[in-house]
Image (cartoon, rainbow, N blue to C red; front, side, top):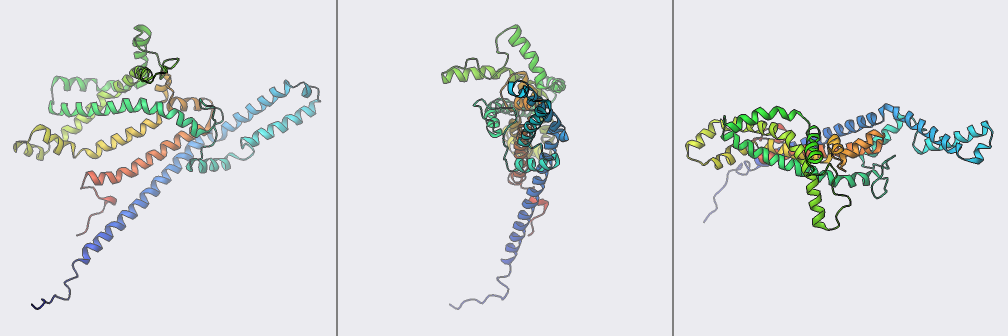
Length: 380
């Protein structure tokens, strides 16, 4: 059988999808590069501002110089041989000690120069040595100090935030079906109580459950001395978690539930939901397909930012409950002007936040087909 002849342009149409696909790929690459560059610039600015604030624009240098002079004077006054020297010789020796100490801290250079060195080290995660704080193992490395305090913060905030998130979303979804019920009105009435911070609620919990009734510990992460058996140790940690976790949940559960409940009510009143009800779909199917699915980007954003908050801890809350986490470490570093530790915690948080925001842009495309990377439209 003779082969049928094809038109000259029969192979032309397949070229159009390839050009469209190439255009989409270029747009994705361009958007990814610009987005990464913008987030990196944001991190650089945030970290440099942290360096300036942590050093108070150079004012901390004056405090360190005064501390060095005081320490040198005290050291020389206790040395019997130095006390036998003349006043001029003692002053010269003190000046030498002060010069060596200032050079060791980098105080022989202007703060403007050192601030950019601090910025470079911070951005490359070369966090250096702490000036005053040490880890429980005796290390002065900022990395070791932060990593040592990270597990307690993750345990506390993972327990509290995961419970709060799951409970508030589930309760909000239930209230969206019971709009105007007694429980719905109670949640609305209690939502303003979330204005009280967790540490403030924690003080009352400590007062009643620890001081008056004595059923729970005042604070800390584990009993002293810590139990040697694994099961007993975990039970002790769980017992010490009750009060701080309860404080965090009580401070946010009503406002979170009210916020999610309102959000779900908006989607529950859409026309396509009414049509699904008319088709006879069950409430569970309607919630899963037509209410929860459109809210996935918002839910994912809230969950991702909640995970990032675990790394920062809560300065006052951990201090109130004597919890050995990053928040309490941050509080201690601020009190004694330990700049490397302050900058180190801020850098870790800044990088985590930037990576989270960057990844969320692509997750939105996966969970919601209406979202296009870069804001463009697919060409046909």
